[in-house]
Image (cartoon, rainbow, N blue to C red; front, top):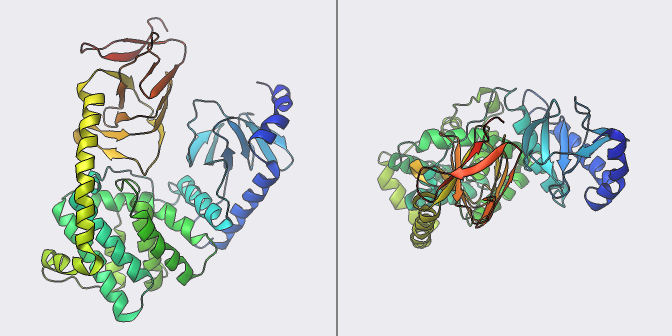
Length: 424
């Protein structure tokens, strides 16, 4: 679509989806928020940013792209983003520019908007500041014992964020003890948790630091949020959104330069233990069990035992639908997908189940609302077998194929797979 033809559609699209005056204001707020925390990292957080309305695909940016996809409208650039670009809050290359992309509408309050925008801005610069992303499964945090000791750690961190003196030392000692015990139970936990706390945790820390709150107000906000977000159904991905900023704000109290020592392999909890001079008890397991009662351990155990029964039933269902039963296999070499981090279901060697997933690749777009299984190591996705005559949809999913691709029978009876048409 050429610039002139696009311009004919802009008034209706703007009215229906993105208010340009509001978008301009939000861009300025984001720049102001970035300026206020300019000392956090070695580069400013604010940079190329684009707002996208997922329904209309209408996009508004704070600057031009390099391929002429956007046209100027006052101090903004507008256009339509192609459907193969996944709609998500993320850092994204498009039109020759590395953008911070955020879904419209944005949160209604300035503090919540700034937190979201600066979180995503951090992801845009993380490679440049030497902290490239490394996403880990953290499947142990979907297991009963992993969740129990994480929830206890969160309760101790919540107390420690608003405490002083001996009470703060006690709370941090408890949090680090619960953490150490969990990591003793699950041998891969330390590395996997640490990587995610740098990747997502520092993004969220940057967001919390950008909310316009003072030090104690920030810690009080996060202290309360740790209690509320403990109710989320899945921790395996989303946990770092809580522990990352929690340890970051606690480190702020004891060290002004801790961020300059941060590397992709850093452990935030080890850094805090060092600067806050926290001493571990001699017997970690004994101390963890002894202190659990102070934080409502029995209540947490009862809740997690009930959840584990529900999880076992859910995994059995997903195994029937996405492993043992007939499936459609899709190649996913680009691994370009969007999902809800609060719904992630680790599935061991079988990959990860995403109850809601949008996957884009060279063959087109898959939209799943009742579960899709993704095996990152094999770059392959699975949904239940097609039910439509054209094999383009099934129970809870829809496939939009590009020309040159087709669905054919798979290796097992009842299975299907996606392949390129011969000669395409």
